[in-house]
Length: 192
Image (cartoon, rainbow, N blue to C red; front, top):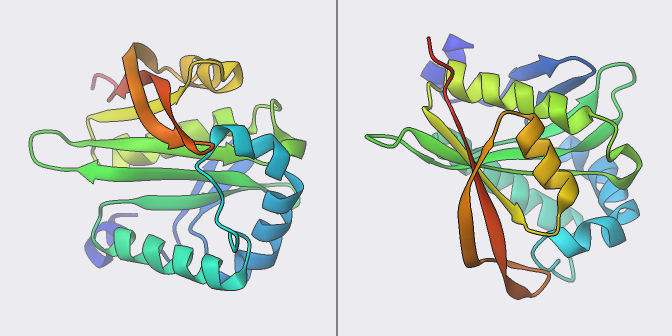
């Protein structure tokens, strides 16, 4: 993975933990991604920004892939899709965004899981993989995450993944069409 850091390339990066592996998205993922997102739409909508009218279109996915590539090349963000090792089923996605260097050495995590795979432990494994990548390969010092106060599943995931609740942010993100309060979490690099 050291060559990844020198080349700033997302190709060939595969993060693994337990039953899951993470890899960068590509245009070849569009149909599978769109199908899982459509199947899970009612499940995801309460926790996400409003979906654009063309959210599941090939053109919208192409823009997403281009944005991911742009962030990856600039080392400001790293988006992955989460797959099941046993059958390559798409489970969800996880993104390390807003990567800050200098004195901060930090980034923000966001994630989603398809409805059929929720609460089965897959996201816990994906969190371990992204944390290992963030603290190991990227040498970040801090990971940050936020979730809606009433999202008990996400709060449990973060707590069980070693994140610590650090505060409350009023009207932090625009979710489901309105500014909503969020609970803030952090995870620091393990002591070496």
